[in-house]
Length: 76
Image 1 (tube, one colour):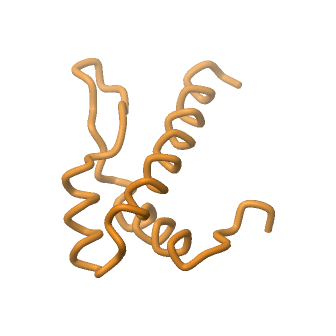
Image 2 (cartoon, helix red, strand yellow):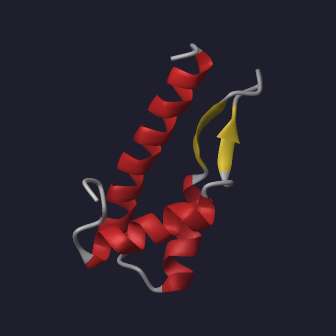
């Protein structure tokens, strides 16, 4: 797979993203504006993952999620 995680940190970040994908921040208008970083970091620590590297990778996953949501909002 083209976008499959290539490192243990990537696998951990993807696992964390899948576990926490419902932990989102919502704007007053009801739109998803990002992940709940406090919940993500808490889960990261509980799972024993490398906080710094995983957090950096989660930010990339969040950006992709928001990009995808933005496209779906516009019917793309």
